[in-house]
Image (cartoon, rainbow, N blue to C red; front, side, top):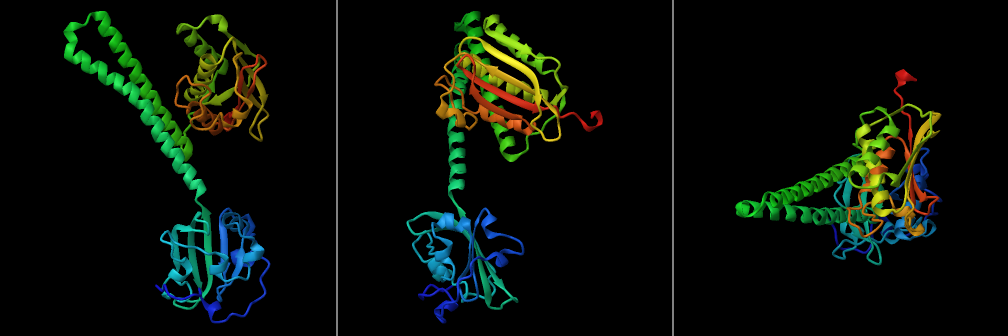
Length: 380
């Protein structure tokens, strides 16, 4: 590995300028437009001069392709490692070991200190022959940082949400074990009911984490069965009434006939539970649920099923509409992990459906999800 020197490669020995090629399409492969690639692509020829500098590379480096083409690689792409050493002098792609074929991806710095992920491949006509092309791939680190921040926020949220119920469970169980004889049966029952409710809360949180993991990795599985969506909504309404909500707070309207819907009943129950819970907890007035047939969101199917849940509360501010289905979004300060609507969106989309949010006629929030009928082929 060579560190000394002021020039990257053969261009140091031959300073003659060659006409800058307009675009490096041929180097990227027949019929491939480098500007269509999602990652930055920079290609230098056997003389170390840049022949391709695609649109993604220009976006990442803030260097215009016209300013980079025909320039020495180290001038067009002045990279430094995290210790401040000039990268092309350090690695010497043209004059280094002839057995090298690539540089693995690593973090390097652009002028101004901006980090970028860089990997390189050395193209030779024959093994141990001279380098004919250096192909450099650039990736912005911002997407990775967003993912890392999201994971950190998820861990922090989970830790916070788990701490409260687990502290309660530990406190009550320790108290009961130490002073069982001192409490009346009613006191014991109250503490055990609290422990049971907190255990349910922990179970729900773990289930949410598993759902997020499966949604993010594309492994959320569906077990499709015929689903009576109107009856499913009725069950959730009855559960809220049994929990103390007045029956007249809910208005269910089912427009018949409905197409036969094939979906995962457990997942659909999860969607309905979340949307109705949000309307009851964060909304006001009457919660209206409309179930209708509609155009299918899936190409090739004519009909689908639509469910709209609206309330008469303050609604969602206009500036927050585009963040409703993101992780950790909370519509109020009334608790919750902020993961429910993210999971709802994932479940609806894995069914091939769509979900939107808007303002209800009564002024509150209105969520509408649409599912394709997804009937098995043998029924079509």
